[in-house]
Amino acid sequence: MPYWFDGNNLIGMSTDAARADRRTRVEFLSALSGWLGAGGGRFLVWFDGDDPADMTPPPGIMVRYSAPESADAAICRRLREIGRPGEVIVVTNDRELASRCMKAGTNVLDWNQFTLKMRARSTAPPRAARPAAESRRRANRADKTRRTPVDASANVDVGEWLRYFGIDETD
Image (cartoon, rainbow, N blue to C red; front, side, top):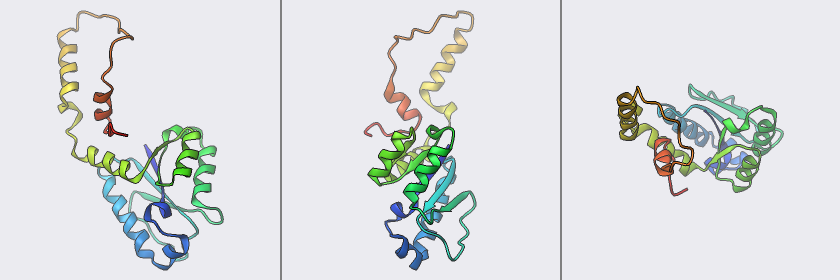
């Protein structure tokens, strides 16, 4: 799944400050590259302005500069242009941008939610070892000869599914 990051918002720096001190952008991109191993998906970071130093991002991370428009405007414009905005997760702490992205049908996480999700993925046992999934597989193997229709009104343990997908239930 593609993740789009609102770069300047997440590093907490204006365009001019980030241009004056490139280390913050480099450190942010380096921190993101650590999450790639957690099965994070594809990472695209949108920074405001341009990059006069032509910085090379770490492998696996793409960077776009939004000049002459803001990164927020570039993100929203691009979401309108793609065919499936629901397949993108925008990571931002900007409530206004988050609201605009959700209205466009996009999933949104703030930085804390993103890091919790990545931590859950990196420490979660393989899917085959998850107890609920294993018990379902055993039941299916034991009951191969008997097929019954699925009861759509059956209770669903939403908490179990949230944990399965690494989503914090308190959100």
